[in-house]
Length: 81
Image 1 (cartoon, rainbow, N blue to C red):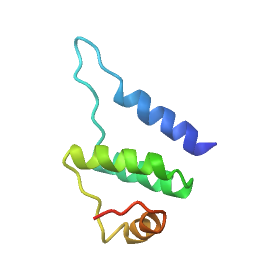
Image 2: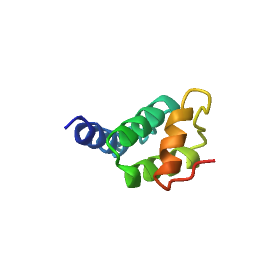
Image 3: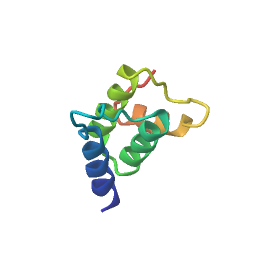
Image 4: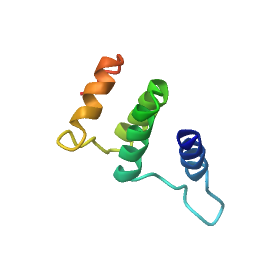
């Protein structure tokens, strides 16, 4: 399914690094896209994982664009502030 493919690509990209390249760090758009994909697939544990990575990387979820996503997460027991 599409979520599994997106998750695999996301994880593979994060692990991409070598001696001559810095590790790849997702940007805010990538994080929000993965959060949307996780919510659509009802993968709430992975949603929580990606959200934590996003926050620890210094990004915030745009509450004006993702209000419904936050409501879904809250209903699933993932309280996002």
